[in-house]
Length: 198
Image (tube, rainbow, N blue to C red):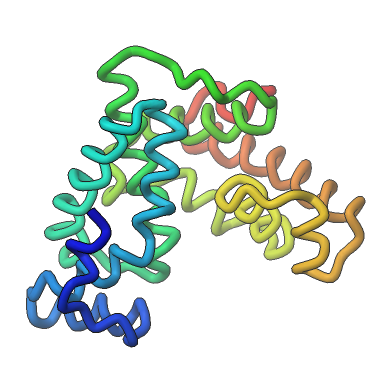
């Protein structure tokens, strides 16, 4: 599947350059090259939520089909982050259709993030419209926002984050705890009920 996107693709360009060329020309080879870079991440997101390799592969292709028009319609500042949210939202929608909760979200932190995302998109318009979770993440103080994104989005450990930020593990833990609390307050103000309850 990955080879399909990599064939005849200008892989040396940056994410922004590929996206800009796709928007300007409409040539899917640019979007395909860009998507190929993040297909493992997208597949991982889908597999974690859907818990089915076949359905996850189908979702990866369906998400690409969404990108063909959504990537041209919307201003994207960070393709990776935007794609992550789009992929998770797509898979959560698929999960809700099946009415089956993923079985691998046992840790409180994982469930907290899952519930926050699900709740945010349950009461809002599709991902290309108002996205309260993204807005609330952007509103966090820098260290809190970075720590929360690394912990939940990239699944890095406290130790990994501490090393990347040159901070003590205790401070990182505090950033994440305070970030979660601030996210909860922000999401509730945005009308997302029960978000970030542990």
